[in-house]
Image (cartoon, rainbow, N blue to C red; front, top):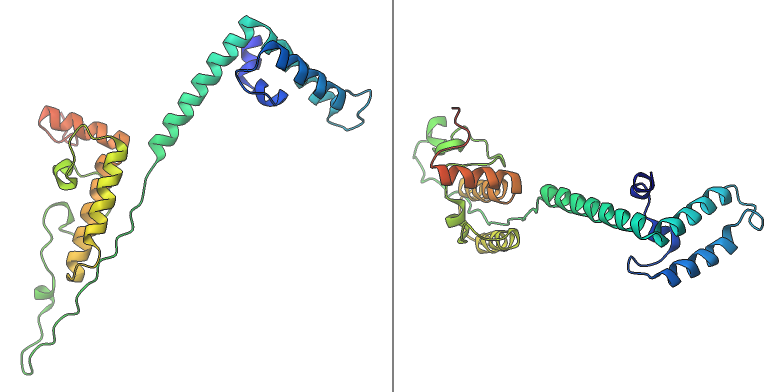
Length: 213
């Protein structure tokens, strides 16, 4: 019972003390808060509830067994929250690439047809859709210039350098879109922990993880 209730509340926060506080500090904090919140001297509607929390915090933190259970549960919850935040971390790199203006056609030269205007886009982008989905068909570690053992921070730094190197480059609008798509695909593939794990397994097994069977 003590463990279940301890997991529902941060008893250190209730008493306003640090997790490493000793018994003397726990008792002192309890006395100070009890004088402030005891219903005999505090007519606030929440006084009864606050006093119950203050008493419960003292009970848990002065009991070595209950406090040990609470500390373990508190650390486990913190670890789960840290993993959740890491999984949701999706850094975005803004890319600024200057596109060159198309050169004017000499007088009398026929205008290009619609088919001629469409430049081929190889692979997964052949339909003209530059989405940010994982792409397992390319070596993104080599693309970013990092090793397969690179940390998440090293990958983010490499992506930042890649984006910076692309700034101010005089290229066509189509090339701008292609380079932007490459960087986004790299981010979606090895910048996301879950996608990176699947990508690494595919590289190790020598096949595309999207294949069935």
